[in-house]
Image (cartoon, rainbow, N blue to C red; front, side, top):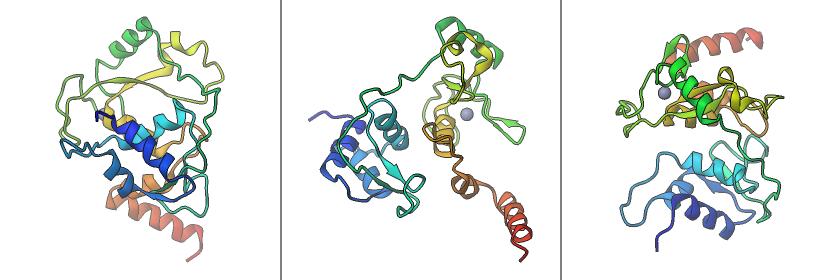
Length: 201
Ligand SMILES: [Zn+2]
């Protein structure tokens, strides 16, 4: 039986409609049964089921009674009008790559990732593959954007996943809790101080 991680996650949700699935359960079903390797990009597969396959998969972001890292497919319905993800055309993508010196443009407080195509990712492991990221997925001019290099940036796989985790393409909500969770201790302290002032504590 040769099934992709995406197909295994899809089958799992269809077998468990209306039931809460945990992050651990999803990683377990996404794990390759022959190699035993668990995919680091399971979150990306989940997001494909939503955007490319039209399934509804709820998380704590859109359903209050779900906890962080819990997911639920309420029914097997698929939206027929699944929006095709726009991509830059070949010429635009070349221009975007050149602008970014063929490296990941993820910018964290002024520090640019800079990993290049084919590099070994020292943090996530694996070979870097740069893919186009739309800087603003809620652009009003989505049809013109495939020809506009200023609308795109190259990102490495790790930062594509990170952006998806932080920013829900469908709702446009910023996943603030996930951002704070992944922040350094120093940044967490700043947030903590801000919140104490904000709540007068
Ligand atoms: Zn990167």
